Structures are given as structure tokens and as C-alpha cells.
Length: 392
Image 1 (cartoon, helix red, strand yellow):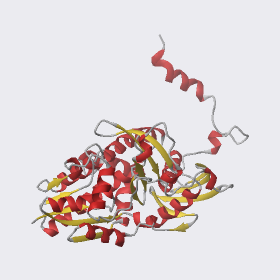
Image 2 (cartoon, helix red, strand yellow):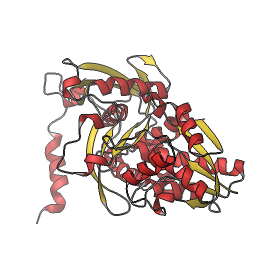
Image 3 (cartoon, helix red, strand yellow):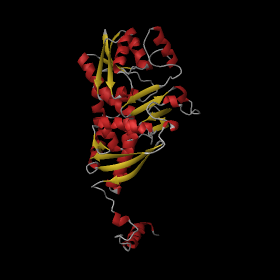
Image 4 (cartoon, one colour):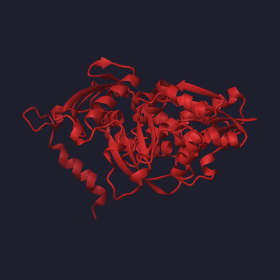
């Protein structure tokens, strides 16, 4: 039999794909990437059992959480990469890492093909296939959802019922969910109706207004060269720090986003996102940059952030341009060390204090009090020179 390595999530699509590929004459090896989804109560051993029950001959599970946060999340955070002002790229950042190990396992298993469960109208198909094509252009890529006979998730659910494929989805909650340490992406079901507010049962890690505390929570985050190192004065591994912030931010409703976004394939889609830790860290990191970076670097970096987010969203993680942008971004982070204190309350995350040994803020220059050392007489000449090119 031909052998194929499938990126397996345990969801409806990939569970049906295992059986479908077997019917096409393939031996199916499943790969489960642990990017932190198990922290939400998702049992990876149960997912492994589901893959075997669906017909997989072998299942690989790899804990990639540290590699994910250190090599994918951290560069994105340093770059302030946010797609269309709302999406913090949790799913998009995970795809090139999964692709990397799909290729590695395919080589180990001597498989000539890899497969994924992405739809023909989504972004993830591009992220997987472009990354795989860069890493090993000789591998065949199979995308069953673009080929098979099913026209809806309801038809897939019926297929799973007929062949006793264990799935964790129902018509009452038919959402398509992707979760990792950096956030949760939720789509489908009632969310496709733009006239409907997302129901509370669609959210997973954040509390709505009625479930939040009635008093604010203050936290302090210390960065070293652009990387979060401490939470409230205590040193944590980045993975652990992110988990704590997801919990703290989640109970205060921080990190929800409802976005009609422009997909790479040209259509608009409506998704909701939850990313408490990512939201908190991005706000704190940006605030520290405002304190430390000079004006021209800070303003130019905003342009870079927009392009960086597009490259991640478009599946171009392994591209030469993204590598070049990393060099620029890392050069801006050399002096980015300091502490930002934030207030979390009823869905808001607000910086309240800032401290850095590399701060460019000088109180004696900005104050309007008696300690003012700014020579206001210099302003007249500055204004004349600044406006000189525009005088007729």
C-alpha cells in the first residue's frame, strides 16, 4: 500500500479523512502536534485512540510547545505582528511548524505523500503546502477535503456515524475550532451569520461580562531583549508564563476578537478569536517599545509589523523576506528590556506604569513643572526650518 502521513487534529475533518484515505488505498500514518491544545482539557491520548479507531496504522505525537513559543511565537511578538488589527495569528504560526514535522516523519516513514484536512477556501491549505513545498518539493500533497464527495459538515457527521468513527462534534455546536498555546480560532455554525452575535457557548477560554471579576487585576511583565521573562517578579519559562496569562486574562475577558477578515484566497470570512496571553503580551511589548525605541525606528517598525503579519498569514514563514525581516526586528530588540504594569478589567488591558534602564523618556524635558529644562527659545528656529520647504 502507498503510505501517507496525515496532519491529524482529532476533529471531524481529519477523522473522516483517515477512513477516506484508506478507501483510496493508502496506509495512513497520523501525526499529532502538541502545541498546547491539551491544556484546555483535550486529551491527546484520546485523540490518538480516535485516530487508530478511524483506521490509522500508526500515530506520532510530538510535544512541540517549547519550539512553538521560542521559534515561532517569539519572533512574531517581537515584530508586533497582528493581521488586520485583530488576529494575533495563533493558528497561522502553528502551521509551518506542523509542516516541518510532517516532512520529517514522511522521511522517517519513507512515505511519498503527506496530507492535511484543510478546505479549498481556507488559508491553512496554503500555509501547509507552501511550507512543505519549500522543505521538500518532491513530496506529494493530498488534500481530501478539496476532492471528496462531502458538501457539508453534516454529511461528514453522517459518514462518521455510518463507519463508527468517534468524533467530538454535534449539530448543536458545529464549530470548527483550532487551539494552541497562543490562542483559539473558532469558525462555522451560527458564526457564519453576520447578523448574529457570537453565543457565549462558542467561547472556550474567556469569560463574558457576567462571569468576570468586579475588581481589576494588576500584573507586571518584565521583558529582556524583547522576550517576556518574568510575571509579577517571578521568572518563568515562556510556555508557563503564557499559560498563566491565558488563565489570568481569560477570567477577566481579555483577548476576544470578532473579525470579518480577508482570506488569502480572496473571500471574506467571519471568525472569532480568543488570545488572552497574546493580547496582554502584545500590548505590553508595544508599550515598552514606545518607551525605548527612537521615533524613526518605532514608526518604520509599524510598517514592518504589517508586512510581517501578512507573511505569517499568507504561509510564507520560510520565505527569504521573512528571514530578512527577522534580522531587522531582532536589531530593534537589543535594548528592549524593562517592566510594564497592566490593569486587566472587564475585557480591557491597559498599561499603567512603565520602567526601563534604556528609556528615552526624560521627565525634565517633558514636564511643565518647575523642573523643566527644555529650552523653549529653540522652538522658534526649529519651526522656521521645519516649515521652510513649504513657504511660497
